[in-house]
Image (cartoon, rainbow, N blue to C red; front, side, top):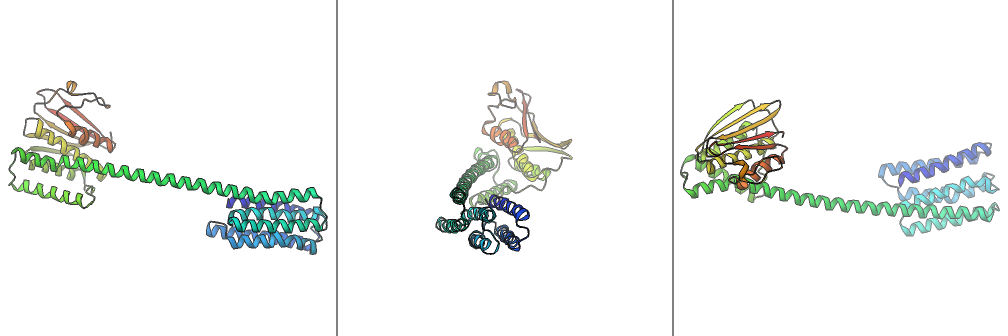
Length: 373
């Protein structure tokens, strides 16, 4: 609305300048009046640019001087004795009323419009203007304020609705982020703490070994951070360091892992962390379901793509009969349960990667993780 009223006043100044240049260029006062109108307009828009809104006192001064006093000055000192010679000065009152509608509240706007109507009616009466001309001008004066007020109200209302929609969207995004965080914590608990407790409960590992005590201390620290609402998703220093952590965790549970690294590319910390957690679950599946105590991990780069594989030579399974086909063409293995579904497939999709599982009865299992997918 600031820009709209600026253009409205600009059109009046152009019209006034044309009238003065064509019909009143020999008189001094019309030029002074035009200069005063330009100066007041410049003051209003300078203050508007500074405060990012129309400033009330500047608009009020424009209404009083340009809208109310200037017509009487044009009559007294400018030789405006006919409706044609005073019309351009009266025209400025329309843009003054439009600016008042944007800057003032309802009560002050009513006062300003009433004052403009009274002074402009007196001005046209002084020059014996036709009733039709006077009525048309006063109608334009009033409706300039009405239209500006309605547009201002509508834009403010729409802006309020947009702000409310943005607040609702932000609240929904925050809720989704909290849910995603809970899911991430649940997956992390499944991959670490629950796997450790399950192994101890089954008696498959010695809980008194130094490696097991180190693992329990590490997972206790994770639980402590979770209770304290700390962010456990710290970026890994590198993909190799993140994968080594997964290997050490699996070895603490009694699984022997042969790891080979062939210049894996640098990836963002959150990608390395997601890859490492998917590897943790793949190693957990080897330990729990493969019927072998040995797994092989390989991490390599291929044209900027990170490829990590986890292979075992265990009992394997029939991917064609294990479950329903996935959207990526793979079957959901019945032995994988929540692990492969949430901790491998979903985790890799969540960071723009993909997971592939290849297996057959008696042939072991090969899990391949790729980023980007």
